[in-house]
Image (cartoon, rainbow, N blue to C red; front, side, top):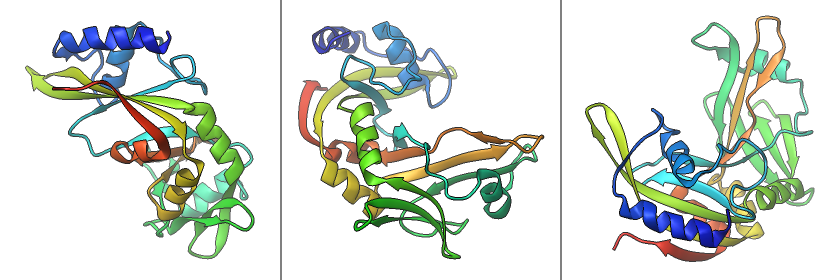
Length: 233
């Protein structure tokens, strides 16, 4: 699907008003939109619409959206060691480390820092141990690969008889990723990292992907251009 086809479809979707969610829970908004648009659920590293990534968000939500996930070559310590030393037992009794990290030490003592001289982003522990590191160049490349351009669709939501409904009535096209702003947001803790690891019963690592996330309302600042596709007027 190209941008013109998407634009025609999203106008018609707005005209439909509230649409019952095709799935319960937080992911219902994106899954429902993809189903209506005729897209398959996107679990690959590339964008959804040719060179455009698609994101959807409830208007009243304050939660963060995932920009991309990236683990390759980052870990400086073995992941099972990190989980055992800095993690906890989750509700299933498994050693686990599910932790949101920014530039200030969190409850697990984890925090991020940017080393501009070496062009690295570090995952640190307050005991002065570096647990992981990413090349800033690789992060920017991943950002540009996943989000060369971005469409954000906003929806009003309501609940009736235990079911959630969405009215997709705003959409914006964000173009030309701003590398400097992306790096600045990591440095300031606006972009956060979600660590999502647990150990299986046999001791092997299950890593759900290290996610780089940001509040939706700030995501547009990572791009140079914002164009309105539909608005709730």
